[in-house]
Image (cartoon, rainbow, N blue to C red):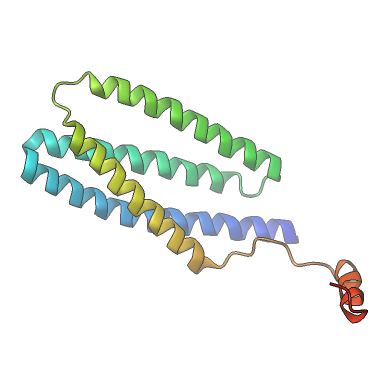
Length: 158
């Protein structure tokens, strides 16, 4: 297996771990939000909180799934995929907010707080998992590429 293929496989595995851990924490946060909203606002509050949590879990999960699928692609393709997913998410979120604001049963504070809590918990779990994974950002340098740097250090250069 070539170095690029091995690195791509490692990144794919990293995205799988990020998704699994973030979904677990995000799911727990969603459950807490739904229970609290049900106690405070009844069934409509619970449904609203569940809908907000679902939006976060689907939108954040879609990003990691797309990034995992493009992990072995060239960097330009990864950037295009990331920007494409971001653009689609923003448009769909705007449409969802316009649609949801017209529904009489949606409890705005429950929906909004659920989105905020689930997003913060998801991102915290994702950052923690990313730090723990210790995925190398740069490929190891070749001996020929590192020789000039070693010569410069020996000669007193920076």
